[in-house]
Length: 332
Image (cartoon, rainbow, N blue to C red):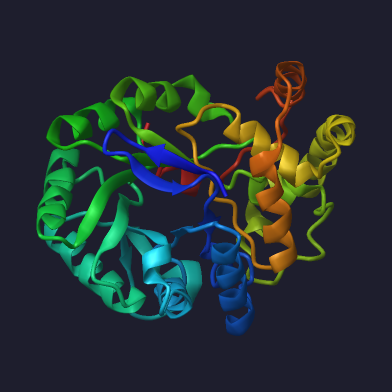
């Protein structure tokens, strides 16, 4: 497995990471032993950059990752996130009650994450969503204190605007920004990706496979669990999926030419956009994980990149990536 570096502090990680959220949250989850086997296989394949968050479950995903990395802590890089107010009762998403990045809350979350992950230091800590009531300077200042105390090694932000990132970097170097970026979510190209490069910040795309759609294996909602949150996303409604299937049909021609799967082509496209980009596709099954890792060695010609760019223009994609309530949490 190749490696890449994030940020000015040269945080070295596997060129492809693993998003662990779907193993216990949002997509129906996976049986614990299966999820742990998938994580172990990832590490064996060289995929050592593991992404989780306190809100995934809530809490369950960090516990799962903690169990999986027992005995192999020195082989992995762990990223987790804070930033939500979580209610003591309820199930899944209904326990999320807005954002909370008060300095005292950040410290509480970090202590909780360290215990659940059963580690002494978090390799990369992200603010999950910007809290408009707490200045980003105070948030990053608190994270910088945690770094000095040895609780974390690197600082990250998620779904931030270029302006917020610039303000944050004046307080402390930011190692990485995590934002949704894929063939059908190309908004980062309009601003935050350019800002990251101006400031020397690494870029970590989540959902680089369009929450599974870009693999070509999802044609309707019949395979979704009852609590799969994609059921309510605009792009996963019947009409939008039918329209976007036409784009995948065109993409299949390029995949055939390159003798690869749609998933591999979609990931290779993301990775081709810069050596400072480290996508973190999720994978609940070992077969999907193995397929994804094939993207790292796939070299797409410039001509094919242009063809793909022209297929998946923002104007060609049908449906928004989120509902309005979710967009309200995005810092613009």
